[in-house]
Each structure stands twice: as C-alpha cells, then as structure tokens.
Image 1: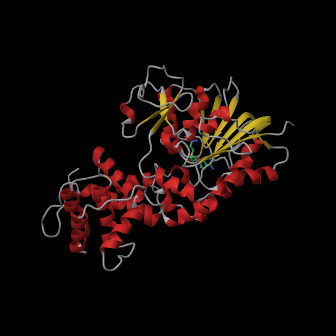
Image 2: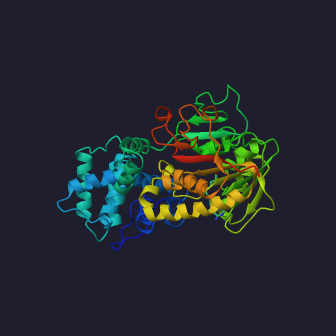
Image 3: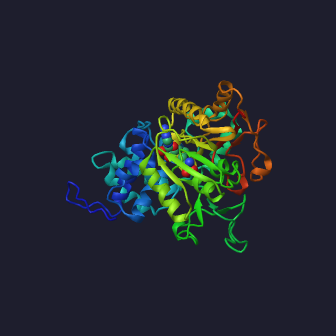
Length: 429
Ligand SMILES: C[S@@+](CC[C@H](N)C(=O)[O-])C[C@H]1O[C@@H](n2cnc3c(N)ncnc32)[C@H](O)[C@@H]1O
C-alpha cells in the first residue's frame, strides 16, 4: 500500500514507507513487549493489505532471524556502538535485512528507511546503507543464534546441536503436508515422502493455491508435529481426548485414523481455526471449549493426547521471534503448567490405556524432565516405548523409547521442528 502521509516539510513519504514502518513496529513489539509476531501483526500491520502485509512480516521475520549478524555489521560500521534500543539501530536492522536477505533494490530500501529516522541521525543511516551497498556486505552462511539461547542449548545438548540449529534456521523451512489418506503415487511428483501420508515440498508456494486445498485432502503440518498422533496408530472407533487441540493438526490426523475425537482447547479464537480445518477436510470431531485445569470429561477415554502449551522454542525456524522472546522464567512457568496438565490428563485415561504427551520445545524441562517427574509421582504408569518402525527413517527413539527431534535430524532432507513426544501406559487397574 502506498504511503502518502505528509511529513512536516510537506513532502510525502515515498511509496512503501508504511510497509517498512509496520515492519519496524512488528520487530519492536517482539523485542520490547515480548509479543509473538503473529499476535503483534494485527495491530502493527493494521491498514496494510495482501502483499504489503506479507512483505512487512517477511522483513520483520528476516530481521529477527539474522539480528545478531545484522548487529555485528552495524557495530563494525560505527565509531561508537549504537545503543540497543535506539531508532537508528532498529531502522538499520530492517533496512539491512531487506538489502542482504530479501535482496530488495537499494534505492527502495534507502528511500523508505530515511523517513523512519526523521528528526534523528539520517546522515548516519544513509552513510551505513550506502557503504553496505558499495562494499557489497554479506551475511554469514548460518544465522547466529541469540547468545542466551546458544548458551542454554550448548549446556542442555551440545555445541553440535547449536551449530545444527543455526544451520536449520538460516532459511525458512520446507512445506510439509499431512494427508487424510495416502495420495496416489502419480500425485505430487515433485514432493519427497518421509512417512506414510506425508509429502514435503520446497518452500515459497502459496498453500491455498496448491491442488486439493479446497477439497481438504491435506493440511500443512511439520513432519515432527505429526509424530504424536502417529504413536496412537489407528483408532478403530475407540475414543481419544485430544487436549490442547487447536488449530487441529493432530485432531485431523486422529479423526482420519479412525478415532472418535473429542477435541478440547481453551481458546475460542483458535477453536475457530480448528473448526474451519475440520469443515474443510470433512472430518468428524466433537469440539469442546474448556480450560483443562477446570474442565473434565464425562468419563475416561481409551487414549489421551496432550499437546501441551509450551515455550515453542522447537518451532524457531518458522517463528524466528521465539528465540528473542523466550527467557528461562517463561520455560519454568510453562513447565509448571505442563506438570499440572499432565497430572489431570492422566486421570482421564482408562486402565491400561495410552497417554501421549508432546511439546514443540527444545527444552528438557518441557520434555524429558516432565516424564521423569510424572513417573516418579504416578505409581503404575510406564513408558510405552516408541518403536523405530513407527517413525520416519532418520528419527530414532532414545534408549527409553522417548522421541526427541533435534535440529540436526533429517538435515539433508530439509530438517524438522524440535519436538518431544512420550507414549505412556496407564496401570491396568
Ligand atoms: C501447542 S498448541 C496445540 C496445537 C494443536 N494440538 C495442533 O496440533 O494443531 C497448545 C494449545 O493449548 C491451548 N491451551 C493452553 N492452555 C490450555 C488449557 N489450560 N486448557 C486447554 N487448552 C489450553 C492453547 O489455546 C493452544 O491452542
């Protein structure tokens, strides 16, 4: 959308300035307020439509993904280090992300950056952007992780994991599709198949324009996100409680696999998305809005899947804001909530039934540690080990039969999100 807002001089801002202003607001909302990018988008990109809105989000996402390296370039070009929170640094970050990542034309980047520092150090910003073009600045091959995350993951995992994480978030990930039924061999000839009812496509395609979208034969779901429901196998008419279900990726898998699904989530807005997904795919599911800290089912179920709310650090490739927002205190808060939800979910499993616990987190506190604490406080419960033949090749269960996906897995095939999945068996009486 062209921005013809008047500046004090009476000149109009160059076309495209509103989009960059929105990108600036988005990055600010993430860094200063800790808002998720998709939440901040509604306010920050208000008034922008279609392609302009998508471009504002792309600028903000790539700024956050490459921020450590962009800051390195900015710091190397100024005599005095600019404070972290000044406007000129913020404008330089988004401008350099356009130049070096999105490869936007230099004149458009500069002309839309300068109005954003009106009344500030325009000459400095102009000089740095000119130099970046003249000297043909480049970013490294791998986007550096924010230091607190790199340190935490190096301690929890190892340095090789940090390097793999940097490799895997340096570009947006491929598109994974989950199918309600196995597609024909002749369909999707350019896709890679990593598991039954899965196809992987190169990124950058408009999902809604892909064949079969309106017919509802598939939905977008990372390969790792599909693992928890795979561990429940086919339902054969049995009942599963799908807790924390929205927007419904796992719900659709379970319904397509023949389970009677009761899908529960506390968020009305996210349940609207679940409902739209269920309508599009023509599957049948009971949908309940409820907070599972107070809601309870009428009776026990054959199986329960708890896809617990978490820090979401495992989906940092597609949500690069996560690693700038999440701090150890958030992880600790989430872990406390998960302990409570897991204990409640366990009560709703029939004797000898199955409970699958999952989080899209790369933090042990939200995965392995939850299971150890649960088993220590729930007599008779045991891990029902995941078997290699239930998983895509390249993903192996650990020694106890738990699944932990890490950024170095399936590297050559485009990687996968960081997930933790445990299948637990209830005592038989
Ligand atoms: C990881 S997401 C679920 C993703 C979903 N299972 C899927 O596959 O599409 C976590 C969900 O938990 C829900 N949630 C958070 N706290 C909750 C609670 N106390 N009771 C019920 N749902 C909750 C959130 O609204 C969110 O939709």
